[in-house]
Image 1 (tube, one colour):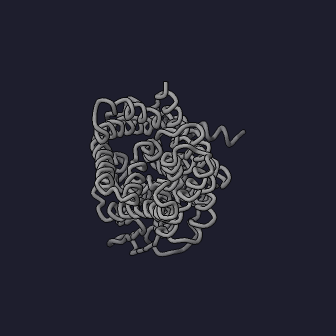
Image 2 (tube, helix red, strand yellow; image 1 turned 120 degrees about the vertical axis):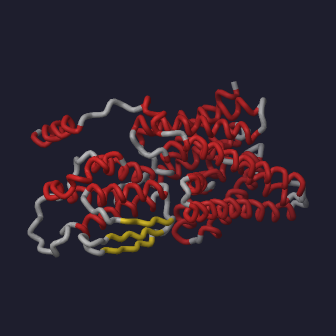
Image 3 (tube, chains in turn green, brown; image 1 turned 30 degrees about the vertical axis):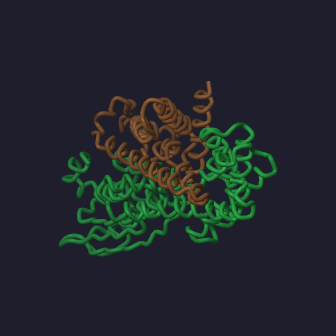
Length: 288
Length: 161
């Protein structure tokens, strides 16, 4: 923010040098790069929002990019699943763009990368062309491989099973269940099922496998096995972001994200309850 | 002794989950440290104060560390916060509630459900309070900034090489 105040006066003069050399495109006599700048800002906002950043960060990053490259009338409104941005006053061309951004997975490495880029822009280290290139690179940044994720899910499940009171054998079972669960998440739930059905299915799957392992005498504490194994489903990211958005007074996005988190919590509980109910009946209450 | 193993489990578990969320590799040690610290505080306090109170204090510790490391590494605080807070989120509470509802022990279900809610609210309060602290308080953690000119020079050199 401080930076913006310092620079506002000399924006117009520096613009030419910052924006690189392609002056030969003969657009209107406004800032010829306005469209590009706003598109870049929009793209940065898109990447941030999609990958689990807070609303506040998205807005600030977009503002920074607009201001630094000399658009004064830039204005953006960010919701949890969409960005509206406009610009235009007596000197600047009118521009408006709306983008719908469906909620997808969390890739904090992309958030970190855009954040780093935004810092470099403020320090004056990158030209507009480079910004577009860097954003395109960030967009296709490879995440962790699927096998790595599946393994991490297993390890996480095992650790949390131990943490909540299971013993080593329970943790080994939780590892197996965590691996199977993430196979389900990656190949069935995420691409094909809705959030509600997917999470009910996930909770049910975990409970079913854990109960089977328990009945086969592989694990000793059914409860801790299940608690550990459902951890990969727990919506920690929407929950934390919802709180932060509400604290920043972004109530609409905050409540949408909180709703998302609560829905997932309830779906998991329902999945677990469903399978428990069936087993309860079949075994006449002996199991639980 | 068991606290030691539990903390170890919290550290490894936190790192595993930070991998799931795509945290860059160089931040894993920080995430593990924060998760472990949060769990030590939480488990250590459980014998003295109620569950929501210890969850809140642990959350405060987690966020203080997260903000410090975020300033130190110049990256979004979300990276450390989300994975570090995972051991404290009442996943177990949700499970017990479902369990007691199915086994028809509604009093216990209500009690555990309400406890889970209280823990969630405690975490919320912890987050909200610590984020109110001004950013300036965390300046002590900042690394020495590299001056813009120096960096430009360095980059030019790289180009020549």
